[in-house]
Length: 342
Image 1 (spheres, rainbow, N blue to C red):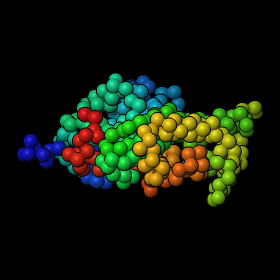
Image 2: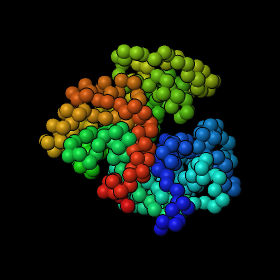
Image 3: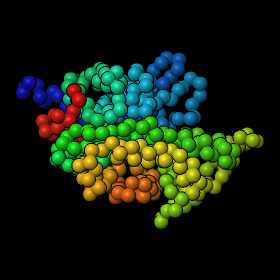
Image 4: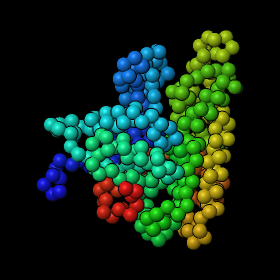
């Protein structure tokens, strides 16, 4: 291969339900929402990423916004492929090239993914010029990104709360010992808020507004040490049909999210109950690591800590922990060969 090495570019992709991140040359070069806007008449893709996200919930009948990934896996094959290829074209270093280089990619996938879904991710990558495509499980990538030495004979527990799935895994010796993948994550939290606003305030809010509420005043417990300020929320009154505004505090959101968080807690407890005793002893000493955007929910670490009686740590940049891990794997591909699913 030697001579053609300069024609090959290495990229690491975290193909998420909510956001897609790409690392090239050790830097995050793309960080965009996984949304595509398509013209219904011509079938052409008009916008991807941030541009398409601005259109969400504000389109007319000729434009449709699609989220090509659902629950961490590809739901719309055609849209996801176009989205990946448009993101790859946005990489600054590749724009300058005369012809498209062959790509060596590492892509991360949920741990509960089926063979068919894995095939779909691989085919998508190969169609956008991927010559060598490696897949890595999300909890594994998150652990590497957080800085855990996964090759040691020592147990570590990772909880990665993304947009579509929450991945919980116990990792030792470069492999996943026991894992659970539950479809309760950021998207479900957002829907909970929409439902709560409808039932408690008779206010109909869109997904983008619910997402904003979740980020600004979202909480997992009702007793926070540093409570966020209340916020004003605008939407449509379901009774009169007029636009109206409501003031919201974090306690209400904690109530709205309670049921879903309970299910995440149960999944964590279940994983702990399946952990072999020697590894359980390690986890007692090391605690639980949280990654993914969902782990930024205020008070979630405290709540999980009370439930499990273990220390809970949030990764320093939880949104990028997975893609950082994927990037590190790409750099040291020989070392992590055993971790990758090719």
